[in-house]
Amino acid sequence: MAEKPVKIGIVGFGTVGAGVAKIILEKADTIAAKTGLRLQLACAVDLDTTSQRPVTLPDGILTDDINRLLDDDSISIGLELVGGTTIAKDIQLKMITAGKDVVTANKALLAEYGSELFAAAHKNNRCIAFEASCAGSIPIVSALRTSLAANNIQAMYGILNGTCNYILTNMTEKGADFDTVLKEAQQKGYAEADPTLDINGGDSAHKLAILSSLAFGCQISLDDIYVKGIEAISRDDIRFGGEMGYVLKLLAIGQKDIDNNVWLRVHPSFIKNSDRLASVGGPFNAVSVFGDAAGHLMLYGRGAGMMPTASAVVADIIDVALGNSATTFKSLNLKPPAQCNCLIQKIDTLQSRFYIRLMCKDRPGVIAQWSKVLANNKISISGAIQREGRTPDNTVPVVISTHPSPEKNVAAAVEDMAKLESIGAKPVCIRIVDIPED
Ligand code: HSE
Image (cartoon, rainbow, N blue to C red):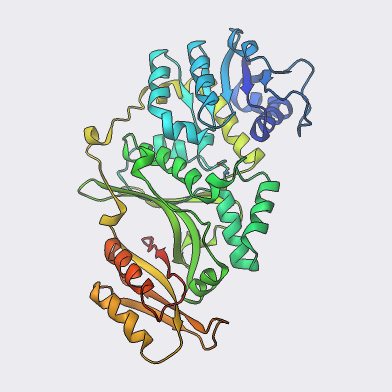
């Protein structure tokens, strides 16, 4: 079979860009044998052309001139690996109007401006491939687009941020301290340049917006997603939750009920230690998907880092070059929620279970006070722990879990409990998520 040459230009020669170049330079023969495509790196564009990278490019490939890509008609695919939502958007639009198909890992850009970029690509008869934007090496985009197309997706529970999972796993297993583990995650290349978006849940929300658009077939906006990060998580809560049989994960959750109500949320979540997602540790990502025909399946793999993300980018290059992406992209017809029967609901319409930690003054009658507040708000206690021994400020931690309760009632109860003179620090409140069993 004659090989088909495919010329590629990269814009943004950072960690992932270097990984992609490494694969193209070192594995071109393997890819040609498997696909019949001969990938060629025509240029790598970056403002920084002097820093050492983990790959050595042939002379003349690294440039700071984007026109090397835009003006070269022999380059059919442009990789936007710049990240962010400003320059990157402009670059993608320029690539599209210059007649290039686009491959990107930029979840923030797609979550915010996906509709506009997709419309521009459709208008110019080009495609945008974005497998690498969600969960690194895991082929979740193609699973939702094609492999699971026969299903109404009922729910997705995702560990979608490798940095957070790395931090929480190390806090759980080694009792490590938050800031130290975050630094490690940055050194290992899991975290974003600004890790704020990792730990505040923003990165997971970007990925959830993309995946839930595909799962539920409509345009999801970031404003539709409730987001809470892991910044305030303490080792004590991870430990107390562990004593109750739970493991803490930052979950990105999309659910749709039979009346087409959709809830989208990212927040720290205690899940049963027997759930499959509980054993997903370190920088790994996983997504549990529940479809009405397929039932439960879980996809697991490396969600961050140079080579896992580069693997997904190259998969997209191959799909574009083979013509598969052009076909699937044409059929991607995401409508605003109102036009496709999705009724996006706010989190306060949900019933949730909660873990609540109270720092109680250790004297008679205190339990009666806060349990009355719970009763007044119609919240039923499911479990409770109080250990002997006081903290230096003469309080004792009391940890309770609740039965499913309206979010509003729990918020009101926590506010009322915080006002009690017998409660020391502000109560800690973390959702418990009961993922359906197989
Ligand atoms: N910063 C991301 C993470 C990398 O930690 O998962 C890929 O999006």
